[in-house]
Image 1 (cartoon, rainbow over the protein chains, first blue to last red):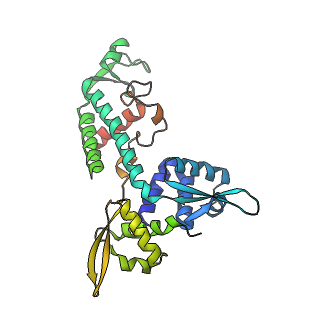
Image 2 (cartoon, rainbow over the protein chains, first blue to last red; image 1 turned 90 degrees about the vertical axis):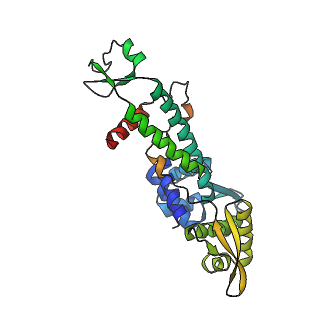
Image 3 (cartoon, chains in turn blue, red; image 1 turned 180 degrees about the vertical axis):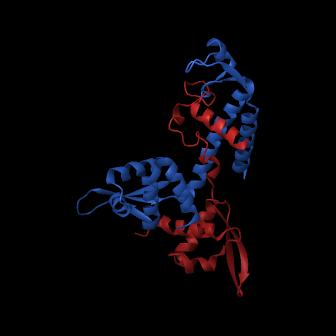
Length: 168
Length: 119
């Protein structure tokens, strides 16, 4: 199994968990195969195989070729991995994630936050905390000001890291 | 079933696994299922797609090409832990929407944990 296939497996695990990993493993082994052959090889139920294949096809990580069976006249779909598309997929995911993180960083920088001193779960910006009279809507505990400088620092570091990776 | 793309995929896999030093074109046929005719065409296609680079090199008194991969193997590790990367609600998430990166609970929990882990 190549390094590219390993990376593909990681992506599959994030997209479709254990079943997707087994399906990608089978595809890497079989190279090009119809869904029933993949189901037989991976041991995953045929309906799940199809669901995962469509999901991966939607992300362009696999491709399919339609061939007409001369005996039955039915179409058979042959599926195959597209490792050359993985780079584009990963880059686009990184770019989208970067946009979200940038938006969050802007929000974190522009607001001061308050955290419930009792449950510690509820964290609200000043505008929302004042509306609830600095009382936690979940447990009724008192809100105390929460320093978000660490969050801002870590977020900035992560953004920088992603920017470097995308640029390389 | 051998199809046009399979030689291309085999060759690309081999070159990517060879690392930064690349691999000699004449060596590729010994390892992959592709013969030299099929493989040469696959290499030209990959070069056209700008996935590889060919450099002329003299090896054992014969001119051949060293094939180098242009892009490194993409690593997903950096974004694996970030909830936004593979979020199911991604299509509905926008700055002005009901679900936004500013007020996302999943992102808040991740950020809190990140800040705690660092300290």
